[in-house]
Length: 88
Image (cartoon, rainbow, N blue to C red; front, side):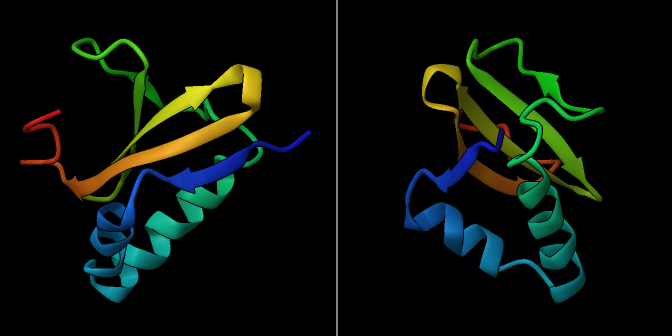
């Protein structure tokens, strides 16, 4: 059974589109895999924020929330590892 993946808002889509082509392709593949498994190997639960998880995509991080009762994954941020966690 698959999960639905959505973006929190247009800013998150813009963050993905702003990545260089190889990074955008890699991140898009990682996001696509979340449809099959929202907790893939290498995903980590963020300590500061209970419902948020992250996966690595090269030097970039994809931050997302999981809503199990709706089988929904919400991408909340995509950014470089040095500043993606600021302001969460």
